[in-house]
Image (tube, rainbow, N blue to C red):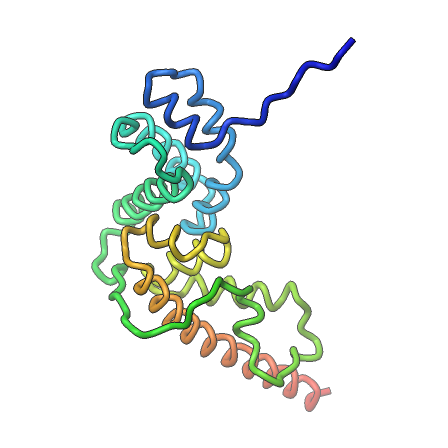
Length: 214
């Protein structure tokens, strides 16, 4: 007996086209397809599992309500990220309600190319890691530094480096030019590098003090 022919899975664009045409049964498929990825993004962006869960649910409510605004054939991934990011921003505004949470846009130049791992970008040329600092410790330092960035800079870092979106997809997600994505990444990396080296110097100072006391 011949095995049944397995058709390739439908693309995200095909699923949204079907949802737009009124086929509601594909909605659950879309949610399941993006559940881990999008929730992981929101959890990192918001720093709060419960809030991330609320925003994830609200994101797909908006997808359902705005499905007629989706243009058939348009890449789905940046469209979903744009909705999720807007919902996350709204959630933070409702929670914080403080003007000092808003960040200013930065305009500097950056080179072409795809993002490299933050760990590589923040390491100073020729400098090795501190003797007693392992990769886990260094990743924690990077995460803490990212959390301290202004919101507009943190957005592009999370989307480009942690979610792996290309510059064009980041631009589509945030509704900004590709050049602005690059300039914000450049500004973010400058700040992260300062924090990275300050943390390393502080750690080396602490370890020296411990050795002297010992």
